Image (tube, rainbow, N blue to C red; front, top):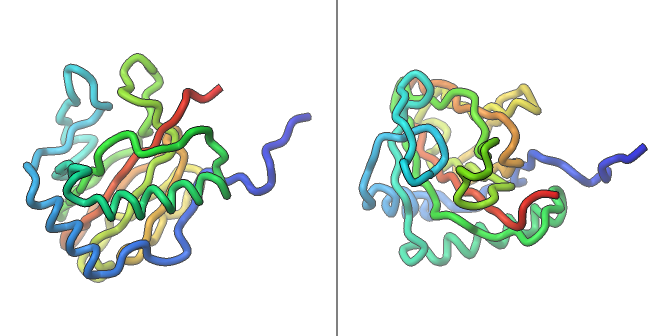
Length: 193
């Protein structure tokens, strides 16, 4: 029989916040200063995604690398350490711009994966996804990140992140009060084999 190593895990929460409340506010300001769009479903293809409010209701923007170099460097450092300690994927690096996301009251994102089963659709090989909570947890209710593997809801505090394998189904439950602000990133490397 072949077994996965005991150290391996496909869902890893940071032990504490990656960013201070002040740093979270700077990321929020950077995200809000970029063009806002209604979030779509489907990976970025030449045709783009599809807006489907039965599956996803949120607003997003993309934070350019040049605008938040220090943020990108900090996240990449944590991702590489997390990958080495838990995932063990080859050649991991930042492959896409960070997505700033706001879920208003009623906003949600139903069950999905961040990897497409049609590999020809993918712009990169997504292996690890990250969600970092930017809002203070008292600013909203609902909106929990739920990862299928764990069945339980991931309760993050402001500035804390969770890294998980992009092929695991997950969702953001409906926000019932306030606005949930988060930073989402994906990391890739050579194709899985």
